[in-house]
Length: 167
Image (cartoon, rainbow, N blue to C red):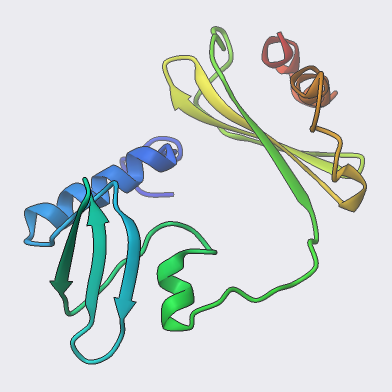
């Protein structure tokens, strides 16, 4: 997609988040992790109060980033709530190691039956595999033997290296 850049860019979510956090800290942001009891007072000069290691602290800020998901306490406190929609599909994923011999020059998107199989390479014979199904797959990969059922679902007939992935 980008000249002189072979393949796709697949960053693990924790790696991408850490890179953004590092840049923020280097450019003057106050970065605090491991806090509890976060209270945000929105407005033109927002404040954030939080507890860390038994102490309470307060920060004044021009921008507050509460990067703890769609149901974040920061989002709730400032009135940004996710839209509630009925689920349209279910996605189950697994980080796989030991994928020696599986080509890494292409990611994989395969539609077979009523589901998609996705494989995103992470380097060093590691990849993230996902099975995307409709509403019928809601509980398919939950409970005992979930991993075995997931790996069996990775055996898509049109992917030549499915056997290596399922092993």
